[in-house]
Length: 380
Image (cartoon, rainbow, N blue to C red):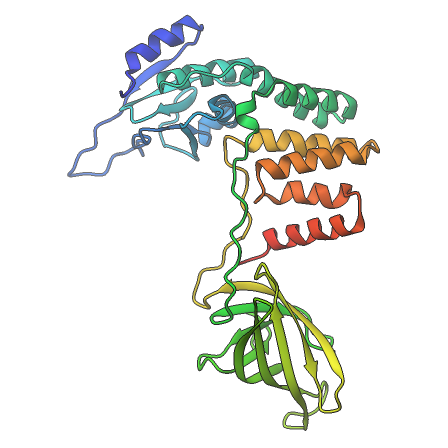
């Protein structure tokens, strides 16, 4: 059932909150309102304003506190940069309420009290341990700002130790495998045997030819390499591409004789890269590699990775920040364990992989983690 705000007021009084309920102004159909009155939040969300005057009363701290105390409950905690009301406090709107709360969140305790009251108004009970854990997390960040590494390390450990099991479960699924298909793809490559880096190999509109050129926003200019009459196949279950290649002689005048031969490319099992060879007329083989940029030349580019979800950010942050402190103190094994814990929570966030690359127990693990960081931070 939809929560009532009068019950929220009673609950707020019980925990010593001072909340002001302000009726949302009615919108007139004939004229635009003078203030940007915030629309009702979704029925399963809690929205916190953290811009303008709300930011001066602790909007960002309240957003973090509410996100932490919401834990693994189904409610979503969202934010709004500025709702246009600007009262003396932070505006919080629980669920689909037609009114909002105005609270003071200028200190950690006030923010925790306000977050608990707003969640109670939305029908969410705070799980034991979350309040204590977030308090230690916040204290750890304060100690880091003071450059007290030992105190920060202790507080992060206390935060992780107080976290209930519900927030230590995975918050993100791993990235989906890339399609094992050549059509419509684009690949980041270097010039085979040349000095040019960061070129893009993409299929021509006709579909049988491929061209290696400079990527936008640079002018494409003349092709660095062309693949003609390409034909797709399979090798050991992996897609292959075989074509005649033409590689202009570097530094030669336009129209000068070009090297030609046969190109054979094999896509990796995960579809993220290819390896291949360019076999010249004399039988010499030149190794060539590429990394996938995306599928469909008309798609809007976006980052492959993703930040941790709002409610999981502080949990993930506790592991990666503690891991960095442990690594700086010379305990690479403990830092590696924190990196693996962060990756388990949020495998699409690059910070955990970056920590693993620095704390890895082998060169192979470090290289694989670094490659994952590059992949997540790249564009699809």
